Image (tube, helix red, strand yellow):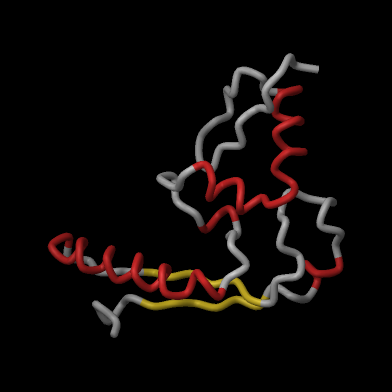
Length: 123
């Protein structure tokens, strides 16, 4: 039920080298994942933007119950809510927020999928 001929969904295997790294070695918290998916609603005609956007959101909504709950951080959009960002970093979020508190307590680097500094005084 693609809304346009250019719309698609890609699956990428992520269970090789990524699975051999400890989950706390980097920010990414889904080392046991097997697949990563990207839903791409594409049409060069801006008049189709609403139908393409609706298709992509409904597709994500239908698949999400079968997912691990997060995402690969580069796949989520800037309009994602903070709870989605936290779910994406999983159990690493609190550790990353502590690093942010120490090195960027004023949240200067806040663009994209922001990790907010942990509450408290900077270390």
